[in-house]
Each structure stands twice: as C-alpha cells, then as structure tokens.
Image (cartoon, rainbow, N blue to C red; front, side):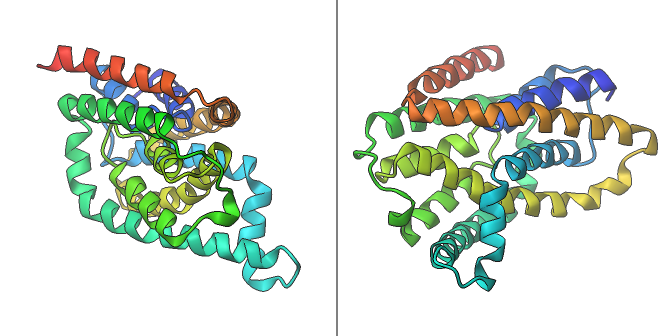
Amino acid sequence: MNLTDAILLGIVQGITEFLPISSDGHLAIVQHYLPDFSQPGLLFDVLLHVGTLGAMLLYFQRDVIRLLTAPFRRDHEARRDRRLLGLIVAASVPTAIIGLTLKSAVERWMENMLVVALMLILTGILLFVGERYRRGGRRSESALTVTDAVLTGIAQGLAVLPGLSRSGSTIATLLFRGVDGETAARFSFLMAMPAIAGAALLSFKDSGALPAGEIPVYLAGTGVAFLVGIGAIRLLLGVIRRQRLVWFAIYCWGAGLLLLSTTL
C-alpha cells in the first residue's frame, strides 16, 4: 500500500464513519478495487477507526471527562453521569460478545462484495424504518433504559458486518425506540468509543507483520481519518436534527444495488 492509497482510505473512513452509510463497507469496496492492496489482518482498517475515535474524543471531550470521573465525583450531575456510564457498559457487553464471535468471519467477508452489497441494502432499510416509524422521538437521555442500551449494543455488534453501518443501525434502533435524534446520535458515538478501542487492542497482534517502512503510510491514513472525521461529526448531528436520514437510506440502496449488479 502506498501513501496515496492510505490518504484516500483515510478520507473515506473520516467521512463514512459518522455518516450512516457504513465505513467498513466503503473501505471494503475501495480496497477491492485498489491494485495490490494488502494489510496484516484488519490492522489498517482498525487504525483508521482509531483516527476517527480520536475525532470523537476531541468532539465529545467534555462528555468523556465527565463519564470517566463520574464514579469519583459527588456533585449534582455525577449521578446522571454514572447512570449514562452504566448504560454504555451495558451496551458494550453484547457488542463485545458478538464482535468476538464474528471476528474471523468478518476478515473473510471484507473481501466478499456480495455480503457488502446486501448489508448496504439492509442499512438503507434500517434507516428508512427508523426515520419513518420513529415513535415521536421525545425521549431524552434521562429516559434511556437498560433495554435501550442492550438492543443498541446488539445492533452495534452486528455492525461489524461490512456494509452494515454502525452509526446507522444504532441510531435507527434508538429512533424506533422513541429516543430523540440528537440523544440517539450522541449515545451512538459514546458507546462506539469502547468498542473501537477494544478492536484496536485486539488488532495490535497483527502489527508485528507490518514492514517498518510502511509505518509512516499507516500513520498518515490514521491522521487523515482524524481530520476529516471532525467535520463529518458536525454534519451528521445537523442531519439528525433536521430528520433527513431517508436520503442516506436512498444512497445505501443505490450503492448496494449498483455493487450487487457488478457482483452477480
């Protein structure tokens, strides 16, 4: 992999991680058509996710600090923050179980364009249903339940499938549960952080197979994903407020059908 490939993939990751159109699916498609692309396991993909994780940490830095210090604080908001932290932990359990179970299969499916196409179409369906049948969308963060967290954690775990959008499936799940759009997006991002960090730790075992000369290339892709991701977060939050997820559903259907037509 050369520097141009790394920058291109960093841009793709930075845009698609926060838009509900599946970053893994788009990475799989681009990598499929890049000549001679290879990586140890999914190491480069995970590093790109680390880049967008950095964007999330920067954008939500106040929330992260509050959550990490919540168990030790005794101020008025500490109880609320401890409750939110507990919900994120509850969501992370099914995510971890499903992610570890599917890990080896996902590495194979990243090269299977039929799987990617079908999962993109499924993402479009989830977005359409979540937007079309959202139940009022009036429940705020204080009304989130353990059931909300577990169901969203399951959706996030299944989103390791290439083409099934993590943000799309988790936000759609919360919208269908009656959670307001901004709360759904915020909780989706916060619960993604431990999942991405865990995936990064698991992938470090593949770093030994990385030639030393390619380390700057991998870091360049990670840095690009970070910078582009910062802008994409703002865009998604604005889209959620305006209730325009249906356009992303149409995009996923179109991309999935186009890919399907070239695969069959």
